[in-house]
Length: 269
Image 1 (spheres, rainbow, N blue to C red):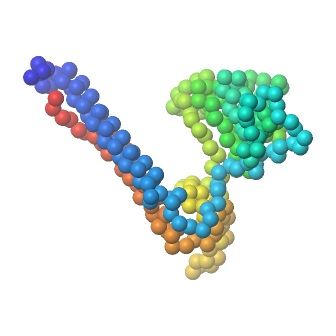
Image 2 (image 1 turned 30 degrees about the vertical axis):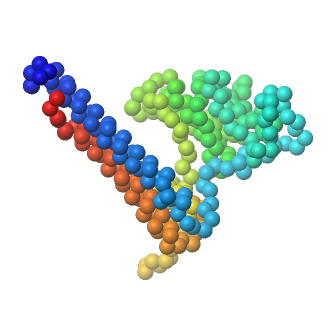
Image 3 (image 1 turned 90 degrees about the vertical axis):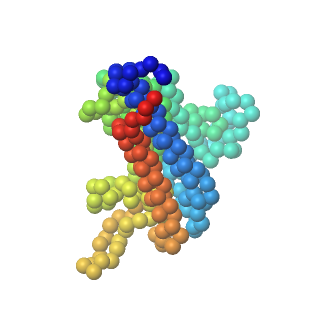
């Protein structure tokens, strides 16, 4: 016997601890299962299909390497510029800046330069940055400064920001350690305010172009395409979509299970 009387405050605390520990173990186990399914032979990437087109931000969005540049003296010894298809965008966190560096080590673009920030604006500790799909803007996450910032590449200006720099929280215009913000490309093209986001995500995951012009008994509906892959879906695409949907459902079920266990399950010590 452990000497803790049932129903006392110490016993209740231990019960809560046990519930949470079980919930964590169950949730982690479910997530591991999802990971095994994703990385195993049945993963979406391994399912056969005609060539999948990439929907990620590729090097074609970056400015081309100027001709005649020689390797910079600041490039690490042994570096081979030919292994890179284009420049590299770097979130230089502790220097409070973003830079784009050519394969030869030359700085091609930098933000903020003197005068780039408007009066009262700051740009501190960016820890990741991504080009938007059209290559015209960069979205940067300032995790330790609680803000997400959109920068126009051509003008070197902040054109959008969410979060109050230096102030954490969960209210309007507040974030707490945001991480890896990415601009969604096609979600707003859909006429439905809800369906566009998951449909665009599925199009990107499968390498397809979804929606677009469609014939209904009532007539032709002309909608924009979501995604830039093939518009000709084949039966294997349906199987891949169902596989992805099943993984998403399994992940959601594991999270719901963990929440239920944490709030309902009580085991004796």
